[in-house]
Each structure stands twice: as C-alpha cells, then as structure tokens.
Image (cartoon, rainbow, N blue to C red; front, side):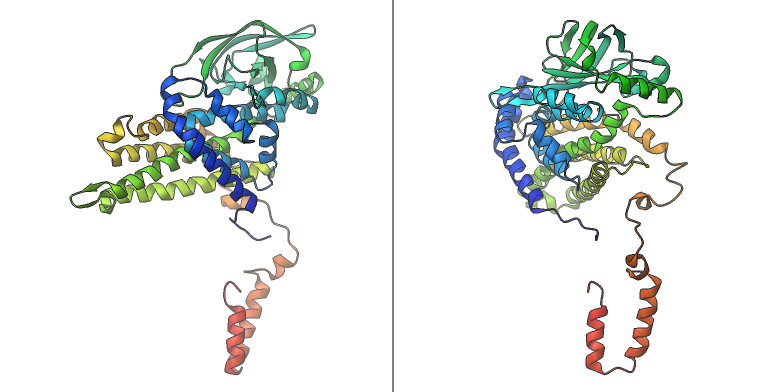
Length: 454
C-alpha cells in the first residue's frame, strides 16, 4: 500500500457536516455562553440531534483505521467555539477511559449514561487532576480502599470538566501507594452518590462555556462492581506492578487523548489564523490592505506553516493510536506540544493584526486568545510534554530516524524490486546502455515509461 494523504469521501462528508454545525449553530452562540459561563444545554441537545453526541458516534470515529475521523471532527467543532466544543466532547474523554479500563459489560451499561439522548441530555466527567499534583499523575492523593462489597473514596479533584453536574464521573484513585502510577485504578461514580460534592465552580480565563469544578470525596462509598475492570484483573495488575511490569490506566488514557487535544487546539489556531488573514485583507492603511505589508504577512506565513506541521503530527499520532503502533518517541506528546503552542501564537498574532479592535470583545480574537492558552496546560503542560519526549532522546531517538519506528517492513517482491532497490538500479543501467542503440521512437516510448511518476 502506498503512502497517501488522501481523505476518503466519508472524511469529507464528516468535515462538511461538522463545519456546517460549527458555523451555523456553535459560532452564533459562542459570545453569549462565554459571557454567561453557563453549560450550553441547547447546543449539546442540537449536537445530539445531529448525531454528534452519543457513545456510538465516538466509538465509530475511534474505530476508523486511518485514525483521522476524530481529529477531523474535533478541529471543525473547536473552530466554532472551544468552550462549547469542550462541553460537547468531554464525555468522549470519560468514554475513552471506560473503553480502555472497563469490561464489555460496564461499557454497555455506563456508556449510554454518559450521553443520554435528544431531549434527555446527560454528561460525563473524567476526574484525574488534584490541587497538589497538577500534571503529576504520580502524585495523586485520592485513595480508594476496599471495605467488604464496597470501595471507599477519599480525596479532592480539581479542574474537572463537567465536575459536579455529570451524570457519571470516572475517578482515578490510588489503591496501592507503594506502586506509584501503576498502583492506581479508576472508578465509576454516579451523580448523587453520597460523599461526592462539588466544592466550587471555577472562574476561568477561557473555555468559559464549559463547566469546570473542584470535587471532594469524603467516605464516598460505591459498589465493588463500579471499579473499572474486574477486581481479579486489578489484583493481577498490581502483582505485575510489584514485579516492575505493567502500565498506568491514567497514563494510557492520556497517551490516547493527547492527539485529540492537539486537534482541538488546531481548531482554535485555524479560527484565529483565518480571521487574521481576512481582516488584514480588508483593513486598509496608507492606501493598501495591510496584508500587503510584509510585517503583517510574514508572521502569518510562519503560522500557516506551523499549523500544517502540527496537523500532520496530530494525524500521525492519531493513525498510530488507531493502529496500535506504540508511541516510542512521545509522538502523542509531540502533536499536543506543537498544536497547543501554535494555537497561542496564532491567536496572539490575530490580536496584533486587528490592533486595538483585537483587544476588545467587539471581535472574537480576544476570546480565542483566552481559549488557546488552556492547551499548553491541560492534559499535561508543555513542560510535561517536553519531559515525555525528552526521556526518549538517549534511548529510542538515538537509535534511528523517527519514521523508521513505523510499521511496514514486509519484504517480498517490493523489497527486491521496489523503488530504490538494487535490482531496479541495475535494470535502469542496462536500459540506458540499450537506449544508445535504439531507434528514436522506441527511445521516446521507453523514456515515457521510465519517467518518475509512471
């Protein structure tokens, strides 16, 4: 199979539908919900009616073997509004954790409770971060202790999207403090469970249309079957961890979701970039559109290249995740790092292009600037992404070029006779010798057949 960047007809249709929804439904409501800081229930319901808000929809996107359906969708929705977009897709983050760590029975039972249906919308939350730890998943203090047929949770979570209003909250907690990230497990906590309380709703810089809260768990008791996965599997996992084997469920979830966050950031970056280009083309100063000034055009040129570069990193990481290719070199972190940082630069440049008008709420660019900053912080700060990538430099990265880590080395006839092979080189040399004696018409035909791209 040859390398291709061609999108399928289904991809194009998904992009068309998502962009139409973002342009006609999300964008007109973005400023309103940013000011009100309220959950956009009507937009979520509209997304549900459009088929964009259900467990089966996200499961279908994740099942795409190219890995591209989900980032394509996310980029368009977040182009509309990052805050509203986050509310629409937050249950997908919890669904990812449920899908990775839960049993098939748990998935069938709880996934519908995370989304609901048109006219009866439900929400889900993934509660990992804590006040003292931030991006340090190894420093979690929330504890889960088995007591008979129940688990008892105690601790505090913060920066939780849909926290306190979610119908289902997946909580990451420590079950064996001696094992670090490998001594953790995830638990399903339904809304209204005694002991789980919303401490406060957070007043944020950006993404103000999404509900973010601090949660407390005080002797919060849940049935044993609300441990994600089976208890026997948990014990097996802990035993492997004691031998220095196994992985963290939370870290595994982050590896899968970082390309998703990169796609979200690309939506904000593209919105800012497109607006800046359009404004600079219409805005005249000194008798000409300001985009004709290299001081305006060249920074936008750099951002255009950076957005495309970040998108390709996002697509690569998404393809790898969809096909089970391990992230040996922090490819998921690379995608999030570059996409989040170009989003900030694109929004900042949009403000600069718009001048004083960009600094006030008359134009949307100041909102995009506030929204963009989150991507360098949540799901692991830029510093954390650099640490993840940095750990590979002395081992994996020093062994071979990065693309050599990708699959596809199958041998066979393509290895012997494919482009660049010794056999093709020898055949080409022989053809050139024969060509010196061949008639012009035959030489022309041979040259056409042998030319690049034939």
